[in-house]
Length: 196
Picture 1 (cartoon, rainbow, N blue to C red):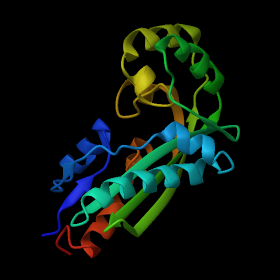
Picture 2: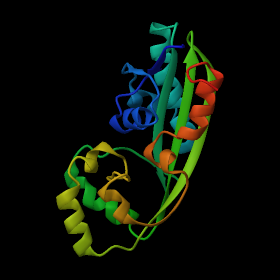
Picture 3: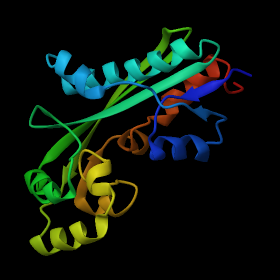
Picture 4: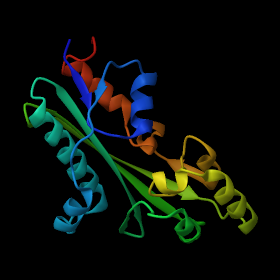
């Protein structure tokens, strides 16, 4: 069986793979996302997600050439602008107010590398429509959301309380979580990680 490595520190990506009963190990990549974003500021938010996913996968693959390595990233786009995770939960109110009553896009970029070379890549975009929530809801949400305010770029965990922010979503549930699972499963079968 092919050794499969997740090049990510994301707890939700780990949980998705565990729930699908995929055997894997985790090795966090040594990649400076801020440097990549600065050097490649010409990229669209969708392309940036894939570039970051490739960088993570390649970094770990070069250290572990025997393994099939998955790198993944997700970017958020609001009005054509690439947004970053908030450094402080105190900024979450302004971020959520800027999203209220409006759609935004989440772009997933996945890359599988072997021997430091790409063998598969995938990009997927989901559009999430934030409802016109009340100030009362926002106050309650900010009080209860906790870690999600800084753990994700949109200041929400879609798989939990954050689902209450939305009136409609266009996209795959797993892609919204940052790991489009069905296309990944197909690639893992092709690469010998899973039985076809």
